[in-house]
Length: 123
Image (tube, rainbow, N blue to C red; front, side, top):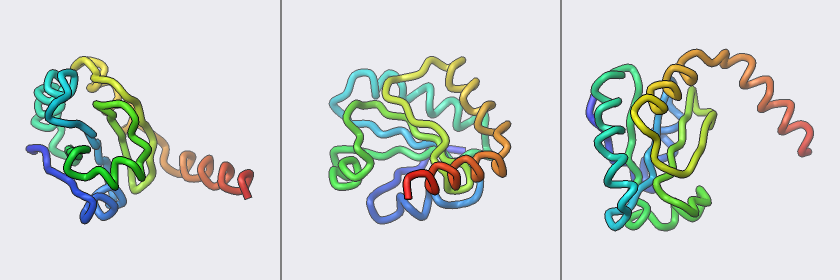
């Protein structure tokens, strides 16, 4: 599956869908972003069951601000609408593969229970 572009209009709908969504927040002027792009694209070809989305932080500055993206590239992984991973910096291919495997192997009932407990502690 090829990567898709997400914008402020469709970001929430995309990441809240069932399944796994990986988001690469990038900018055209960013050297590490350009080096990571083929790694991200290559992984999208291997994992047709995962949505690979690219967020242009320059074209979507409001969303980038709302997501508190301070360094690019920033990679975010969502599963069933839950943010389960977020890290700034480009990943080498093996590390991205490992991340995808870990996200696929998550026990989402356990993750949701942890999120609920954390939200309860904050209230």
